[in-house]
Length: 254
Image 1 (tube, rainbow, N blue to C red):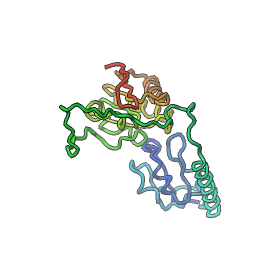
Image 2: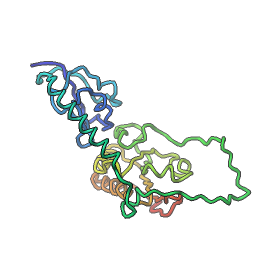
Image 3: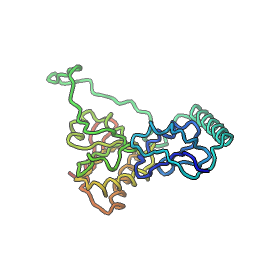
């Protein structure tokens, strides 16, 4: 039968996942960092997902499609609810990370020096200007075709670094396009694909990568370097490692 149904432009989709949450029928899911329609039978064609898409990647079209199946949708909704319940129970029962586990998950109290020199004056109410030059900053949400990426100096940072290093804005963000992500919690293969696409399209002048000292941050380094290999373009690259104590402990490149 011919009816209205959604269509997703995979080139425009930035993988934010907002449409998946907006679809009450559970007709959408993320596959390899992109939103996809799992089956015509699950889509009612009303387009609740359209207003949530920040890149206008979703449209309603009319084509030959299987009839909307309410019973099938109800079964999927029940399965998704059960899965969410199981994940919630697992999360509540999750034990504290073992000391021999990943250092990136180990709880630490950051000790700060208490003997501040008398010549140092700290004014709490003094506002420093933000150096952020674009939005969004989450790597998962940045559109590779965004005009601000063209021939830009890119800053790609593990998101913990801005909290660990006090002068992050002035030292690293100034005059750069900033993108952040978590190499432990996000899909590094997706990062590689996306950064490679950015490099091919925009020919960036340089890439500066900021990471934490923990081993899991190596995933961000690999993603950027693999992206350059995949794009076949070597971009001037520099790397800074920040300690949990807020100090720069290593610098590579300019």
